[in-house]
Image (cartoon, rainbow, N blue to C red; front, side):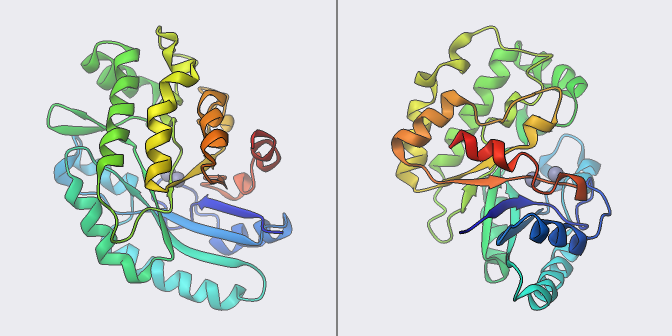
Length: 271
Ligand SMILES: [Zn+2]
Ligand SMILES: [Zn+2]
C-alpha cells in the first residue's frame, strides 16, 4: 500500500530548520512512508512584494534551487531501494505577476517530477503581502487594507479563482497546496459571515478544481497551529472533494524533523 507525504520541506528552506533532510527521510521510512515529495519553496520576484527583502525568507534563490535539484538527485540514488522520492517545488501563485509562476515552472520543468501551487500572498495596492506570516501582519496589513476579516477571506478565494483561470496545460500543478490557509489565524480573527462555514460557498470552487483535474494537498499544518486548530481543508470543503472525487494527498508540510508524518492518521480519518 502506498503511504505518501506529498508536501515536505528540507534543509534548503530559509524559514525552516536545519534538521538534515536525510534524517527527515529516515524518519518517514520508519513511519512506513513509501512515497515522499520534496516540495521546497521556489524563488520569488522581489519586485512583486511589498517588502523586497522578505523574498529571501520565503523561498530559495535561483542558485540554491539548482543546488537543491542536484541534492535530490543524490538522495534518489541513496534511497532508491527504500522510498520513492519526488523532486518537486512549492511554487507561489502571485496575483500581480502571473507570468513569474509560468516562467519558473518552464525553467525547472525538466528537473521536476511534480509541483504544487500555493497562495501565500494577497494584493495590497500593486504589491503583495504574505497572508500567513503573523497575526499582527494579518491584522495590520490585510484586515486594515481590506476593511474586515471577511473581505480578506473573500480576497483569498477570489485569488484562487484567478489561479484556476490560468492555463498551465504545458505542465499542470499536481496539487493545490493547503487550500484554506487563509484560516491560519481564524481563532483570533474569525469572519463574521457564516458563509465560510457552509459547503454551498465552496461548490463553484470545487467544481472548477475538478474540471481542471487538480488534486488537493490534504495539509495538516493547520492542526499544529494553535491560531487555527483545524485542518485548513474543512469539512465544508471536504464535502465536495468526496462528491466530486477530487484526489487528496496527505501533506505534513513539515518544516522540521519533529513534524514529519504529523497527523497522518487524522488526515486519513477525514477522507
Ligand atoms: Zn514554508
Ligand atoms: Zn509548504
